[in-house]
Image (tube, rainbow, N blue to C red; front, side, top):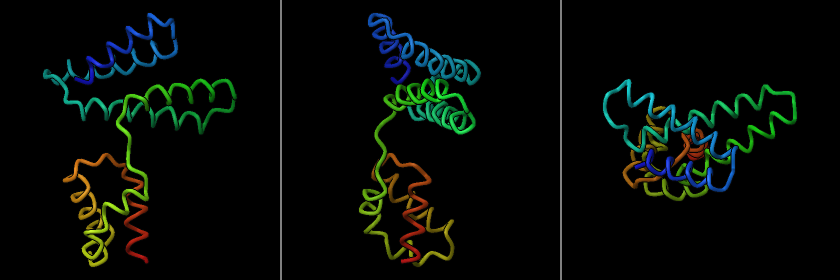
Length: 145
């Protein structure tokens, strides 16, 4: 389970005396455990990864607002730690290749929303891990080509 993996990585970071990794992982684990206690049930790995993605996005937004180079450097290192927990996402080129079989359906969709629905359904059926903004860019490119 994802939370168990987090705990083992926290222990390893403690052994390695890597305080940054330890602290970042503790925050992520704390968010996940808080959500589990509110929901009452153990959280699925997908939902737990969603919390980690939310932390990454929050740090990226903070980097955009931060003016101090030390703060941006710290947040960048935190993002690297958090992203190491997440499965690798497909690149736009890989997404385009995966969507090739449904290209006609995407192009024939009445609007971008329906085209995105076709694309996401196709990608999720293969178990692909994708960023929505990347899929959106590929779909837009496919519809306007």
